[in-house]
Image (cartoon, rainbow, N blue to C red; front, side, top):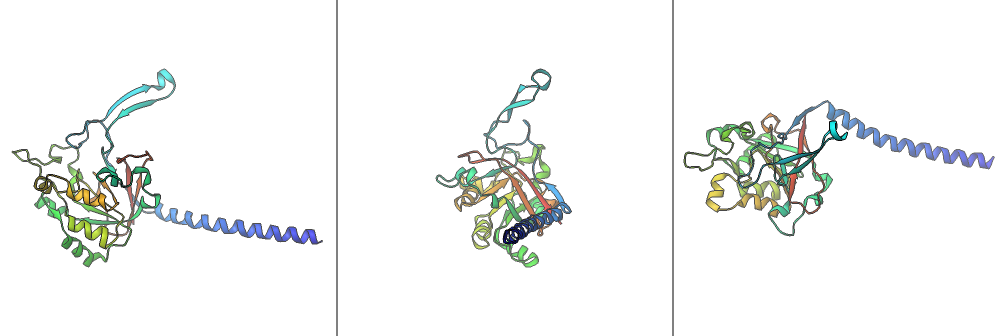
Length: 268
C-alpha cells in the first residue's frame, strides 16, 4: 500500500511538472498566434549581382558548382563583401576590439520597433540630417522611446532602389543623401538606451557630412557605443511609428564585421 501511495505521489508530481511545462509552451504559442495575426513586412532588398552597392565594393559573383540535372543537387559558390545589400554592421566594422558578428546576442535581434518617418522632409531636401529636435518632436506625439528599441530612420530612400538616382549625384558627381547627426544618435543610443538603429541609405552619415568630415563619423559613433546598425533597409515608410517589432536573421560567422541579413517587421 505504501508503495502504491508513493507511486501515486510521484505520478502526481510528474503530471504537475508536465502541466507546468505545457503552460509555458502554451504561452509562447499564444504569443506566436498573436504575431501571426499581424502584418508581416519584409524590410530586406533581394540580393543579386546588379543591386546598388558602396562604390569601392565589387558586385556579387556566383558559380553553379553543382546542378540537379547533372549532379542530383544544386549548389552555388558565392563571392561578395560582408557589407552587401541589406546588411548588419557590428561594432568591429569600424572599431578594433569591439564585438564581432557572432557576439551579437540573440535577444538583440528581436526588438520593439520605433520608426521616425521623415520622407516628406527628405523629398524637399535630400541632404536632410536627422537632429535631436526631430526626435524630441516625435516623442511629443508618440511618447518616450522605449529602452532596448530598434530605432529606424524612414526616409523613403529605398523607393529609389535599382534606379540611377539611388546615389543622387549632381552634375558635378557630388552625392546628396540623408543621414543621422551624432547628436541624434547620442540621444537615441545613450539617453534613451536603444539597442540598435537602421536606415535606408548606404551610410549612417548624410553625404554632405562625409564630404565635410572626410570620414563616416556618425557610423563610427554608433559602432563605438558597442551597438549595431542595419543599412539599406526596405519599406520603412510602410511601418507605423510605434507598436511593431523587428526581427533580424543573422548568420554566425566568427570574427566577421557584418553580413547580409533578412530583416522583417511585424506590426498591428
